[in-house]
Amino acid sequence: MCRYYQQRGIEPVHFPIHDFNQDDLISKLYGAACELNDMISQRGRAVYVHCTAGMGRAPASVLVYLCLFRGMQPEEARVFVKSYR
Image (cartoon, rainbow, N blue to C red; front, side, top):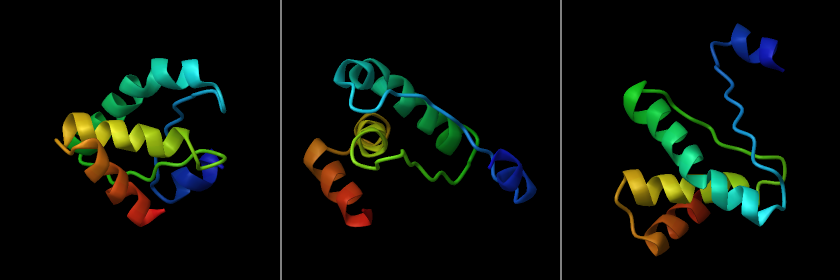
């Protein structure tokens, strides 16, 4: 997959968070949000965020990013994310 992405100018970034592990999710959400902020704000990248199940880790990471770095209130961020899911 990585080769496929590279041939198309896509930089895959792996940010591991264990699936269905609330403690791991909580401990890594801030880091995930910071990584998103760096890619978007500092490097000007378009970012596609996904996880295997698509029900917890990816949406949670984006919610935290929106609240911390884009100034959204939690409910506003939730509605925004849900509108794309």
